[in-house]
Length: 307
Image 1 (cartoon, rainbow, N blue to C red):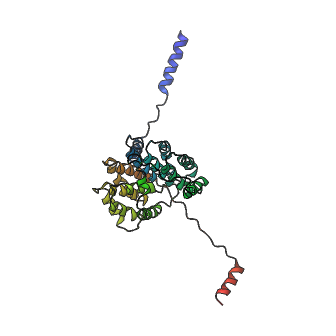
Image 2 (image 1 turned 45 degrees about the horizontal axis):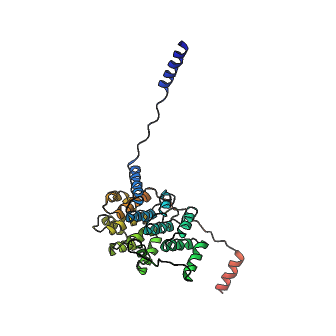
Image 3 (image 1 turned 90 degrees about the vertical axis):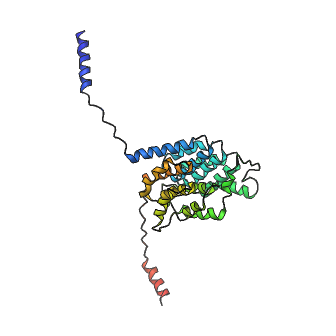
């Protein structure tokens, strides 16, 4: 009995002398905001409203390809709404730099029963020089496949609205937006821009802001800052988009009020923009190309050019 008491007493003393666990460091304000932004995006892609899910998928095109957004996008390829699935494919196109992860998802989308979805997937696969995308597009040309549904209902086929966005306007937007993100590891944001422009309530002012979004004009930053408070939701959404893509890291804190915006399309873009600006990807060091000098060839060329 004494032996057991001594053992118990020794264990108690040892436990009492054990060092207390180190306190968990409190999250910084920026980390807390990032967590909130992730929550907004998570909620959006799981929302019961397909328009909100579509906006969430589009906004994820602003987030870096190394983020967890692929985990959110993959299940959305099974979304019951066509417009959501098309938006997912469009965003995957913006993340195609991460080819190893994106390619299987695009192949799945290529087998979608709705032509709008697999046509969108084929276009991205073609850009990736994938043979499946090329063959699908050739089938479209030869009329062996359909690029759009022959049965379209207003409720279930509004995805065609995205395909029929005014060509000249969106082509200009796409060209400009593609110049926003030459840095490896970042999404190109075309899906986000396309989502803003394809909405019937989108403003011409929003399109104008997207068009000048990669300008070096010193007045652009003030225009973006003012647009955060614009009365039109599409202008506020475009401002969040441009802040992320330009980028304007010193406008990161200005995005926080937009996390409570009444429009889902603004909230999700503000959240994605904040995450992108909080985790900047450093551009690769420029490669210096030193010209190889062949003295014999240079000499003869010089003499031939300057007799």
